[in-house]
Structure formats: structure tokens, C-alpha cells
Image 1: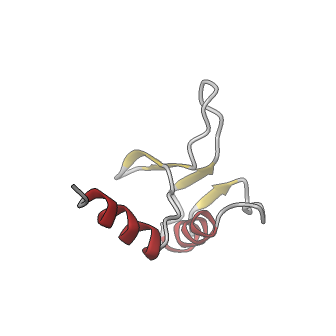
Image 2: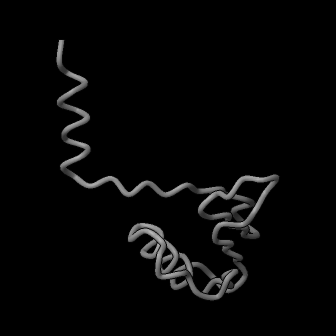
Image 3: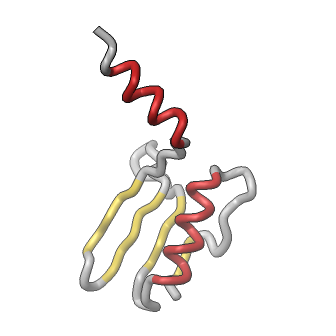
Length: 79
């Protein structure tokens, strides 16, 4: 189980952020650190993950639903 900062995620987070936070915390090894919304030079990425065999990963979660993605694809195909 990864070490997370903060220990829990706020209830106002998006569904995708909550799901990913839970998955990272549960399935990453103990020597991984997961930061949720750390402030880095005035920016707040959703996740920063640090692991000994991974290095550093910065993730931004997008909560698009299937209907919205289908709409974007449809609009993109219009003349």
C-alpha cells in the first residue's frame, strides 16, 4: 500500500480522482509516495507519484464520460 499525502482525499474531488487515489493507494507498493494536488510553483497537478523503480510521474485526471467523448468524435467528423 502506497504512502499518500494527504492520507485521504476530499469528498469534493471528482469521481475519477477519488477512484485513482484509491487504486494508487491500494495497489502500489509500500515504497511509493503519492501526492494529491501538491502545489508546485503555483500549479496543482492532480497526482505526483514517486517510486524507486518508476521515478517521478505527474498525472492530471480527466473525467470525461462516454457520451461526451462520442460527441467530440462526432463533431470532429463534421465538414
